[in-house]
Length: 218
Image (cartoon, rainbow, N blue to C red; front, top):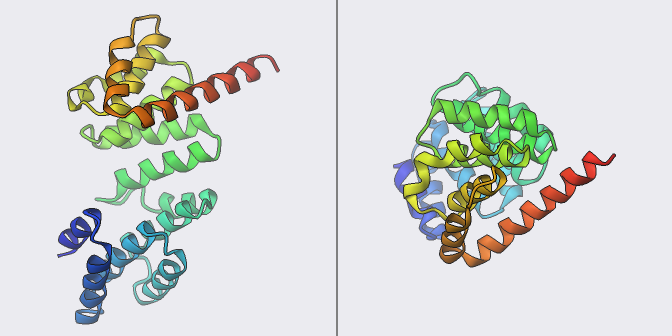
């Protein structure tokens, strides 16, 4: 039931999905997963105050519940309190099935905290836990690219090229360029698929390059 409500929410039918989640809690208030589902939706629409109240209430009812801990981390991340978010996600790194998700979120947190080496370690761990996850592979590749490890960044994304995802193609193309090869075909394909996203990613790469160049001259 939770999966169908989340799918409905992800399709953009937010009001109906949230109403269904509230009704699910009313029908069985002893199920912590139902609170976690509603909290995820509230975070998704940036209703942070409501999400915080719900999570606090649910954690009082179900102390130590892993999904509620994960949602608390998501809420902290969404509110840009990255250090607090790491405290929640670290509690889940040995827990199944949330381990890979928690490791991925830790990588995002440490990326925001300007700790790229630590971010990369968690991104690689999340990738190892589930090699089919394109988000973990893409994050690891982006971090490797920023650190100048171009061949490994490209290798990380090779299994996902057939997906024709603009971000994957862009990052792979930049890895080829960084390694001294012609990446224009991949970059052109990325731009054709998502012109606005291409311009944004290109700006990020320029910003990273400028930062690294400045660091090298300090």
